[in-house]
Amino acid sequence: MEFAKVVRKRRMVRRYDADRPVPPEIVEKLLRHATHAPSAGFSQGWAFLVLQTPQERELFWTSTAGKRKQLRSWLDNMRTAPLIIVALSNKSAYLERYAEPDKGWSDRDEARWPVPYWDIDTGMASLLMLLTAVDEGLGACFFGIMPEQIDEFKTAFGVPAAYTPVGAVSVGYSQDDDLRTSARRGRRPLDEVVHYGHWKSPDTLS
Ligand SMILES: Cc1cc2nc3c(=O)[nH]c(=O)nc-3n(C[C@H](O)[C@H](O)[C@H](O)COP(=O)(O)O)c2cc1C
Image (cartoon, rainbow, N blue to C red; front, side):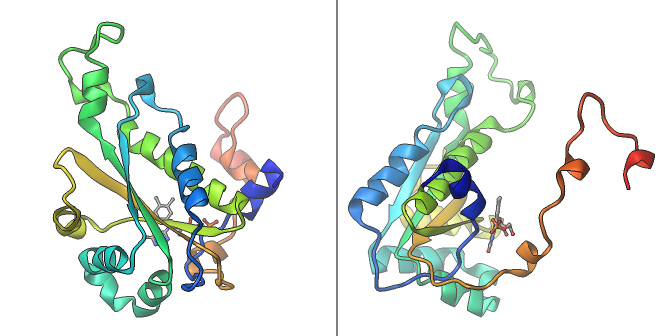
């Protein structure tokens, strides 16, 4: 698919054809593309937990549901996804990479980092999976795991302490025709979010 079309077509899909698994070659492509994301210092401090069997997926939903149990229709719809890929970041991989001689931050001081690049890079990898799904004729949704559920999720899947789930990407053939409340807010126009050369003063904003 043409790249601009992939970008424009991508919307979060929250209901899937439960009887249509994602072909293994597409699962592989999603993961390969994810690892082509940029990363600070080429640290690549990310990991991807791939959940495909009904048992693995059920454990994911039960360990992460928490307060989302109250969002029954959201959960019921999301549960139709035949594939879930959890994207995790590893902060210590970045601190170690930047302590190497070519970077020289041997104190591993987190105050040196303007923003948590470990999470940002994992987010970029997730976006590549979202776009790859569209390019392959599938739908996907990136969603967060609530903070109070993270320990339960990590224990359920034996995730090492150093890794933090940045988000999960559900993937499958779309059966979603609904535009959620948040998407109905509409896209902010360019002239509201872009500042050429100098920040616009508030009185120049209409
Ligand atoms: C960091 C992040 C977290 C999100 N968390 C959730 C979530 O927990 N549940 C959900 O249904 N959608 C989630 N979304 C999807 C957004 O609601 C969605 O991207 C937004 O409404 C715009 O719609 P679109 O992506 O379909 O264009 C998340 C998106 C991002 C980028």
